[in-house]
Image 1 (cartoon, rainbow, N blue to C red):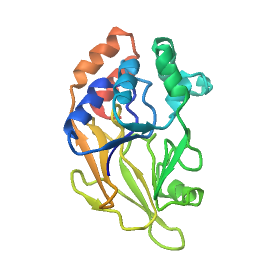
Image 2: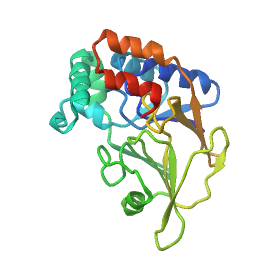
Image 3: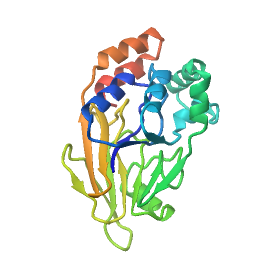
Length: 243
């Protein structure tokens, strides 16, 4: 089984389509780690496209925010405006789809969560210390997460729980070595690692390999759609800078 692993599409249809085109013919099933909507101009279109694919999907914090399940007073002004617009724009059938999404999933040696195994919807795993604190919260060898919009691998390197981070090496297959790992594929629709290209990954279950990937897409096209619906300028500009 070959898995296309994606996360944080954030209503960016152009980036989502670029990922699917780039990975065409190389996967059998999709694992989406949450935040299908939020920030971007295409919430219904992204849910619709995802639903045409054989997939499972988790709930992310922006998916929950659009459903009214989170107090958006904790969001900054730009994020609140985007959430409000998204909630008003989503069709009832797509609201129903998002409302049914689970927060975690365990499939064989893989635990899936949007934020972290300790706090699936909200916690950011940003560094080895936070990763180390999360290893006791899942039992499988590997945990796949999104939420930070930054591709990375955190690996427990000894029995004492010491954890190191490894940056992605794009388009090179990495053998998963049995050491406990927390792995982030990065964001499809809003990268935040100073690289604006859409991020995703390929997981080969039989061969136990992982491959990070990046692919460029037409950012200006997305920005134009965002301006048409009066999204905050900061959200529009960040796409071209990857922050």
